[in-house]
Image (tube, rainbow, N blue to C red; front, side, top):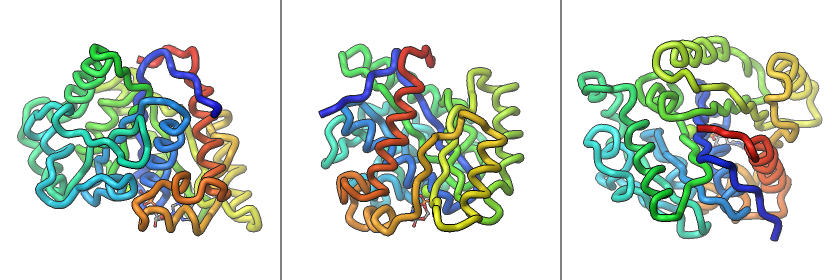
Length: 275
Ligand code: ADP
Ligand code: MG
C-alpha cells in the first residue's frame, strides 16, 4: 500500500464557501477518508448543524449527542467528544447534532466568542501529540454562511480549502468570502491563508465546466488542485450508505479523483511548516 508523507506539523484546513451545495461536506469527508486510508491521522470537525459529515462518516449524531456544541459553548474537552469512524482506521470525528443550530446565537454573548473552537482544538492537538498519536490533518466542515461558526473555524484553522462548483454563478460570492478571510487575517488570525481550491462537480463534456475551470485557474493559479472532481453518481450515493466514496466504490472515477486530490494536498504540505 502506498502511503502519503506525514506533514511536519498538524495541518488545519477550513473547508469553506458560504454557498450551499458546492461540495464542502463531500470534499471534507472524502479528502479526510483518502488521507486516513493512506496512513495518516485525521480529525474531521463537523461544524454544520445538519451533521452531514457525521452521517457520511457513520458516526452517531442524533439530537443530544455530545459534539462540537459542547466543545465550543460549554468548553468540554475534545477527548471526551470525538468518535472513531468505524470504517476507516486513523479517522476521528467531532460530530455535530442539530443542537449546534443554537450556537450561532448563544456564542454572541460568550467571552472569546470567535476563538472558542481554536482553544478547544489546540489543546486536543497538544494532547494527541503528548500521547504519541499526533494528528496529521484536521478538516473543518463549515456551514453555508459566514456567521460566528465559520469565524470560529477561520480562527482555528491555518489553511482555507474552497470547493468551487463548476456551474453558473460559481464565482458569485467568492469576492465576499475572500474579503471575510482578509478581515479574519487582519484582526483575528494572521496565519490564515487560502492555500487550496478544488473544482467540484466538473463535467468534462460541457463548455461551462471548462470555462469555470479556466476562470478559476486564471484567478487562483497553482492553488487550484490539478485534478477536478467529476460529477458522479457514486459520489452522491455514498452518504446514504454512511460511506465515503472511497470505501463505497474505490475504483469509481469519483473515488480515484478524491484520492488524487488528497495526494496533491499531502504533497503540498510535506516538508512545510504549517503551524
Ligand atoms: P455543501 O456541503 O457545500 O452544502 P455537499 O457536499 O453537501 O455541499 O454537496 C451538495 C450535494 O451535491 C449533495 O447531495 C452531494 O451528494 C452532491 N455532490 C457533491 N459533490 C458531487 C459530485 N462530485 N458529483 C455528484 N454529486 C455531488
Ligand atoms: Mg455541507
